[in-house]
Length: 214
Image (tube, rainbow, N blue to C red; front, side, top):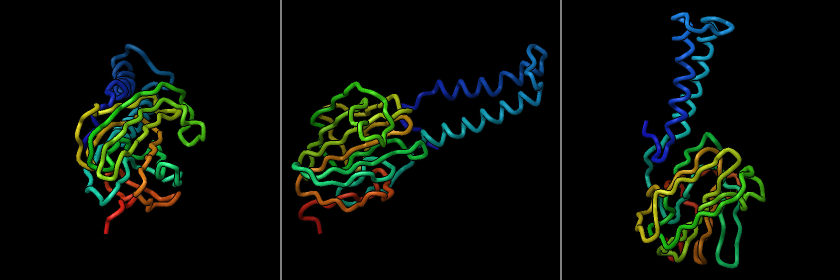
């Protein structure tokens, strides 16, 4: 299983230490848990479950790139609306979704700005004031903006790109650790093709057409 770039390795080390150390200490008589070897085994099993969750959460699978504008994130569509500048499509990522974000269209990174903020749950209407990274893309459809928003658990956004980088559609451009949200601000000429409640996959699911598409 491929792990996402930017995966923190200290949680894995901590889980392994917590799971293995008590068993070794108990076996060699250095320290006995309240439940003895049974307690060590229980702790080891729980640590294994947490380790499997971490591996699952930070997975980074390969994807077949979809047509037109593709989703930049895995998750569930929570907002589809028209704006003065075009349209907006928000995707909520649960802790069970892949959290690697992918380019919705081929294009050049015009700007990348990190904003400090709070850590409200990503589904909260006020979460737009959370810590976030705003990226503007110069694409064939015009200027497109993606906003990576940290949630209550997600405390770190890890960009893989910088201004002037040229990316192909579906290329990985960042990681949001744990539950979070990604907003797509699409220019005029892009027509949303998804509805609230739809499940989407980064780089694969087409979320909007481009004027002139067949």
